[in-house]
Length: 195
Image 1 (spheres, helix red, strand yellow):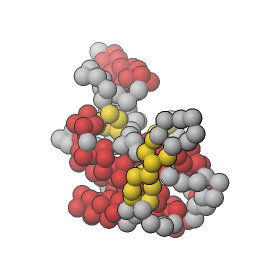
Image 2 (spheres, one colour):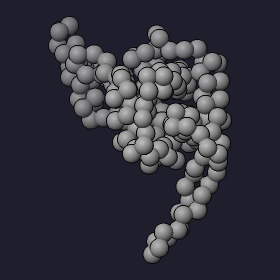
Image 3 (cartoon, helix red, strand yellow):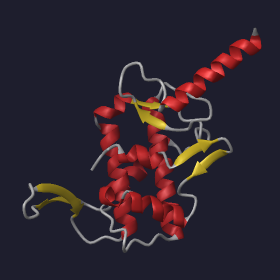
Image 4 (cartoon, helix red, strand yellow):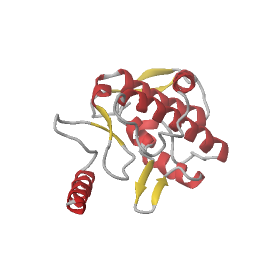
């Protein structure tokens, strides 16, 4: 499982010109996002059915992971999207750990004819879609926060950006070229306005 799945998950909260946009705003949004990430999540998109309760649980987990990300980028500032609304650190840590442990996983060797063998991580026992989905997301967050990418985790400082990103090179300051351009344009505007 890619620990960067956790970044994609917390990035379901984005900002555009009109303000915050939540890709998981409703059950349809959750269904679409899970369908787009089904292989990484171990979910069969053909049988996946999101419910309002599942959506609420997934969003609560996302907020807990965002709280852990905010702690990871400290002493730098957290994402502006929800820095004031994040749950406390200890309950967030407890929720992520409990969610990851709710569905134990085990490696499974798959060896399709004519292909090289590969390992997949699957639930070790039967679990519903909601538990599997949340456990996979929590495990991805644990992988990222306990792995080598944590040291490079940053909150994008560009105006209106609310994303976290993993810095890929020492001079990278923003999550994307667009954010860098927006930040430079805002700085240029401020300099000329004050002149």
